[in-house]
Length: 162
Image 1 (cartoon, rainbow, N blue to C red):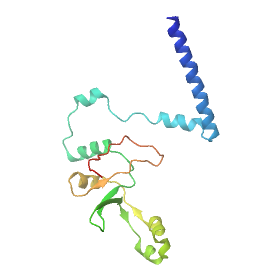
Image 2: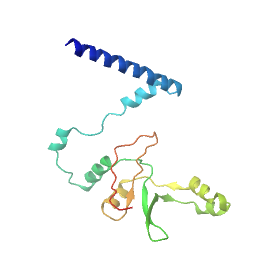
Image 3: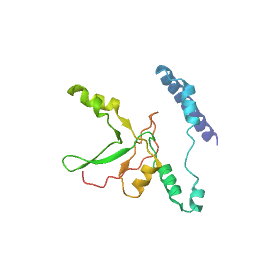
C-alpha cells in the first residue's frame, strides 16, 4: 500500500510539473489561460450516451433524417464544397458560390485569381442543399476545419487506388 501511495504522489508531482510547463508555454505565446479554460468548458460532448442510442429508433420524416445527418457530419456552415466536371473529364470539388465576373474581367490578368477570391459570394450549407445531396441530385462535401481551427470528428472514404 505504501508503494502505491508513493507511486501516486510521484505521478501527481509529474503532472503538476507538466501543468506548470504548459502554463509557461502559453505565457510565452501570449495565450491567456482564461481563453483555454473557456474553450474547454464550451466543448462538452455533443454525442448522446450509448444507452440512449441503443434505445432509439431511426427518424421517420425527412426533416428529422436531414437533422440527424447534419448532426453526424459536421463542418463549416457558411460554405460547402460542390462537385464539378474538370476540362479533362475528371471530377473536382470547389467552394459553392457565385463569381463576380465583372470584377474579374475588369482586373489585370495577373490579378484575376486574387480578385475572384476577394469578390466571390460563398453559399452556406442549407437544409435544401443537404436534401438534394441525400436524394442523389447534388454531390457536396463539407469543410471540416472550423474558423477556430477545431474540427468535429471526421470520417473519410479512400477506396480508390489513387
